[in-house]
Image (cartoon, rainbow, N blue to C red; front, side, top):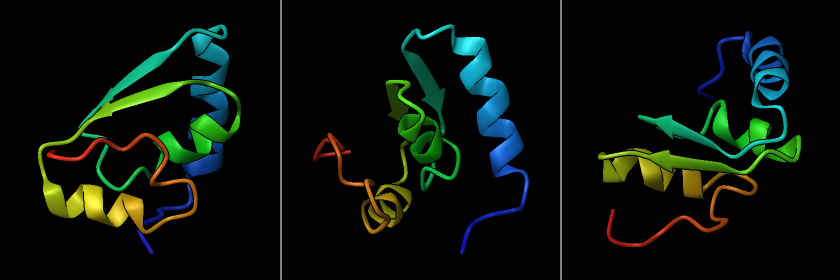
Length: 71
C-alpha cells in the first residue's frame, strides 16, 4: 500500500483549488493523489517517467483509465 494517511485531506484541498478546472500532476507515481482526485470529478492528467510506477498505478482501481502506453 502506498498511502501515508494524508490523502483525504490533500485531495479535498486540491479539489477545492481546481475550481472545476483540469489539472496536471508531475511525477504522478502510482496515482496516490491523482486517482482519488479524479474520483471527485476533476480531470487529472499526469506525467510519470518511471514505467514501474505507471504499472503500479494501472493495477489500482481506475488506474488504467486513459493511461497511455509507451510511457
